[in-house]
Structures are given as C-alpha cells and as structure tokens.
Image (cartoon, rainbow, N blue to C red; front, side, top):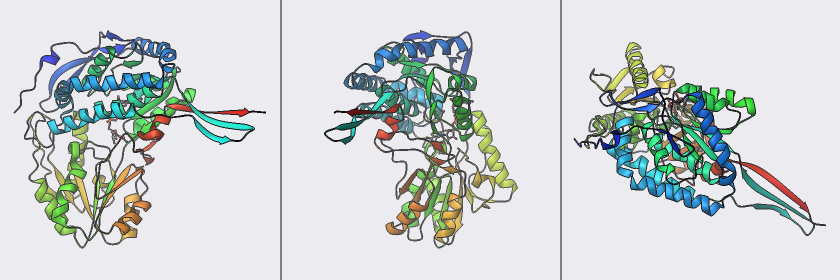
Amino acid sequence: MEVINMDIFNKTYTMTIDGKAVSSDRMIKVINPANEEVIASAPDAKKEDLDAAVRAAKNAFQGWSHKTIEERSDFLCRLGDAIDKHKKEFMNLLTLEQGKPRSGADWEISGSIYWCKEIAKQRLDVEVIEETPEHIVERHHTPLGVVGAITPWNFPVLLAIWKIAPALMAGNTVVLKPSPYTPLCTLKLGEIAREILPNGVLNIVSGGNELGQWITEYPEVSKVSFTGSTETGKKVMQSGASNLKRVTLELGGNDAAIVLPDVDPKAIAKDLFWASFQNSAQFCVVCKRLYVHEDVYDEVLHELVEYAKTVKVGDGSDPESDLGPIQNRMQYEKVVGLIEDTKQIGAKIALGGQVEKHPGYFVPVTIVDNPPEDSRVVIEEAFGPVLPILKYRDYDEVVERANSTPYGLAGSIWGKNLTLAKVIAERLETGTVWINEVHVFSPSIPFGGHKQSGIGIENSLDGLAEYTNSKTIMVNKK
Ligand code: NAD
C-alpha cells in the first residue's frame, strides 16, 4: 500500500477571507472514511466570518469586474497552473478525505486543471441581434455581483471549479462553502488562490449546513450556484427568494440505463459496471436502475456479476483498490439500510449484500436481481454501490418505467441499433442521454437536470451565461 505523505497535515487548515488566512475557535473534525480516523480539523465559520467574506467579495467586485476578459482569463490559467504544481498533494488529500482511489483522484484533479484552462478560453461576446441603417440592437452580458457557491462531498474539487471558473470569468466574485465532510482540498485551493487572485475575489468559508443556509439568505449575495441533494436544493430556492437570487441547482438523480436486445453481454459487462459503480456510485449520474431486455437479461446479469467479482473495494490509498468506501457515516447507514430493506422484501441478491463490520465505511458491490419496481432500491437514489437490474419486454414499457421518477438528470442506452437507441433517447425525460458511452463531460458541453434534478446549466457558454445578466442595448441612429 502506498504510504500517503502526511506532511501537508502538519499545519492548520484555514479559510480564505479577503485574501487572508482565517481560523475559528470552533473546528470540524474531518474523518478518513477508509479507517474512521480524524485526519485534520477545519474551521467552522461563524456568522461574522460570512459577513466578512461577503463584504470582501462585494468590495472586490468593482475592481474584478472592470478587469479585461483577457486579464481574468490569465488569472484563471494561473490558478490552473498552481493546482497542477500541487497536483500530487491535492490527490493525496482527496483520497484521504473523500476515500476515492488514486485513479479517481487523478481524474478529478486533472479535470479541475483542464476546466480552469478551458473555461478561461470562453467568451460571451456582444451579440448584434438586429442592425439597420436606423437602428441597432445589441445583447451584452454583465456580471451579477457576489456569487455564493455550495458544493457536495463526492467530487469536492472538480465541482468547486465548475462554479469558481465561470463565475470569475464572467466578472463576479465568489464566496464558496464546501461540504463539512470534505472541506480540506477546497481550503487548500483557497490557500493557493491567495497567492494569485486579488484579495476578496475568491473567499472560501467552511462550516456546516447552517452556513450554507446563511449564504442562501444573504441579501448581498446575488446568485447561488448549488450542487447537492434535491431536498436541499428546494430549501436553497426557497430562501433565495428573499432577494430573488438567481439560482443554478444541480441536484439528485435516479438515472436509468436501457440495454437493447442486440448487445453482446460479455463485451458490454465492463462498461455497464463502470456506468453503475464509478466513484462507488457516489456520483449523481451513475446508472441507478439497469433495465435489460428479457432476451439478454440472464446473460447480461451473469456477465455483470462475473466482471464485478474482479473489482476490488478497499482503502483508496491502496493502488490495488478499484473502488473506495462510502464517504461518510450518514450515507453509509443509508446505503446499508437500503440493502437491509431489499433483503427484507425478499428480493434476490445476485452479488454482495453482506456488509462486514470493520473500521471504514465499506459496502461491497451489490447487484439486486429484478426487484419489484416499487421497492426502495429502485425508487430511491442509493448514492452507494447497490444496483437493481430490471427485466423489460417492450420499448414503450421501458421508456415509461425509466421516466416514472421525479428525477430527470441523465440516462444511457446500450445497443447496436443506433436508430432505435436515438428514438428512445428522444423520449427520455432527462438533461443528458449517452448512447454506448457514459459520463462524458466537457467544459463546452451543457450539463443540467430536468424535472427535480435541477434548474439551469453548468459548463458550455450557456453555463457561463448563468453567471451574468442579459442586457439589451438599443440605439436609434437617426
Ligand atoms: P446535501 O444536499 O446534503 O449537501 C450539499 C451541500 O449543501 C453541502 O455543502 C451542505 O453543507 C449544504 N447544505 C445543507 N443544507 C443546506 C441548506 N439548508 N442551505 C444551503 N446549503 C445547505 O448533498 P450531499 O449529500 O453533500 O451530496 C449528495 C447529493 O448531491 C446527491 O443527491 C447527488 O445526486 C447530488 N449531486 C448532484 C450533482 C449534479 O450535478 N446534479 C453532482 C453531484 C452530486
């Protein structure tokens, strides 16, 4: 097992407010989910800390928004370079606080660097809507002011960059709060940004759910960009109503994957596995319901189980581990409860299901063989490695079953008949549909949920535009 360098923990983690290190007399203990040991403490911000952060962001707004787009782009590239310089430290810290294996940590930190560089190239140019000798109509994009950003614990660094990069490029200043379960990498990011960005442009405050609520209520915060559960997303929208905050909400999902009868079960098993269990299924867009046509159901189930047996669940710092633990006790208990419920209703468990008691929030890869459509394991978002595989007969039926959820985040279709796959894709009520691939993201591809999976878009020029007001300027030239 690789021994993770602990040097970076021989120091205190501090918030970044107005370009300065700020601590608190209240601290949150951060737990390594692989062994349940405390790895470090993070400040638990008080209301006064948030007041100072919002004030700093507000004061920095004029200077930052008046910089040229090229200047802001340059700052963002330098932030990407600084993450790159500390890549190994970030990866180590991410594995320790989040639990993900080395490959997952590499993917997330490399992605964060890439996003900084690519978002830095995006431009919302002035658009001439109409021009005649007498009249000109232009559309401009103006920044909003102070953006409050709130992130979850599954991809703490990448999801923070998905908010910081476009918010800053568009000319806003930011106050960001990470999840209390995974604050360390984000605090480290703030520390690095202190050396690069003007004071007050990016403020990082750490604390519990109450701190998140204060941000959403804050009158001087113009927009909240939130990634987390649907339940919390509704609260964000409610408290943001006080000053009609703009909101971008990236919320929960219960994504369906639909397997057509023309697949080669053996060839597809690996892809279906990773579509469903990436990041130990603590991923908003993993397949959470796998619908397989009855002609190939038995074979697909068999091949999926055989492939799953080759995958190692273990401490993320062990290079042999393919999947890490569940990130925190609350989520672990929820996933274990779902497995218990599945057993109690008598559904057949094709693999896993036995949770061993040892330090660390480990749950074995669990595959449930055709449980009832109304069972909890089918209708709830597990956010852990428990997958129901479900048999279907005809396409109308499977589309109806896939759509019968309040969620609408993403979905995937697997098969050789691309015409049929595209017809089904058009009928799925989700923001993204992948065909014969999954989890493809890019700074230039719009991502967002339908129904109760969210409001708004992240990534692409549409995502960048969400950090601006649209402003129309009309000139009568006569
Ligand atoms: P969560 O909703 O419990 O917490 C998310 C963040 O919100 C945390 O920082 C938390 O402290 C904060 N928070 C909690 N209560 C708040 C309140 N009342 N006001 C403001 N902020 C508050 O979610 P989680 O458990 O951290 O993350 C898992 C969820 O996130 C899953 O449902 C998953 O599907 C979703 N998710 C969605 C996406 C997406 O892009 N759609 C991406 C990742 C995760």
